[in-house]
Image (cartoon, rainbow, N blue to C red):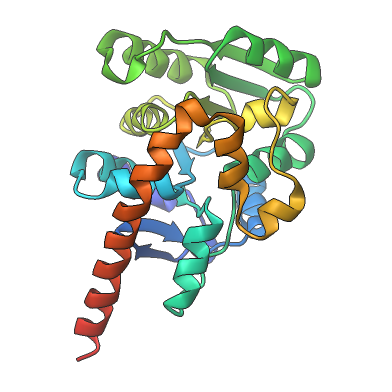
Length: 264
């Protein structure tokens, strides 16, 4: 039996999320409460499994990149981390529950992770690790801070994989950005000795400990969190957002054409 086949049997069939594709990316039809319940009930998976949270930036990078696409296709859960994508889906009569990586991370640390749990962090810097240890002193953290450029550094990326596989933690938070986090998670899912549940959650740990500030709740509710992030770090994000918009519109156009063709 293939590794993928074994992994699928770990989840009760009644709890398996319904996966659908929108704008070329996979999304699972699960609300946040159901996601948290499923994770809480998965006490000790037989094999490593992981969760991805695609947003607009992820979706446009997935376009035409089959290597990157397989990282998302293989994920145990792929959750919509973008209110604009969810809004576009509604225009197409498709309901995509919004489950952001930041909100999910908060729920996990405050309602699922217990004192004494072993949690592995693959983090962007030592400050995040320190802040996490201070914020959750009763969690047994195992942490690694890889060098910059890990995506194209084969040795550094493999070191992340070996570290996470060797720690046998209940949860593994891979928070060094996309697509390197997803690449590490995918590599772990190919190993028969890897255990636990991985979460590719971007800057969620920084939001959790207050190192970065999330948008006010009213901005999140109207789908403007991206604007708050852009204003907070324009030098790094402006190019990503400017170039993402036309590519997203092209994907939406292809989606509309494809759906009309299928209805004929």
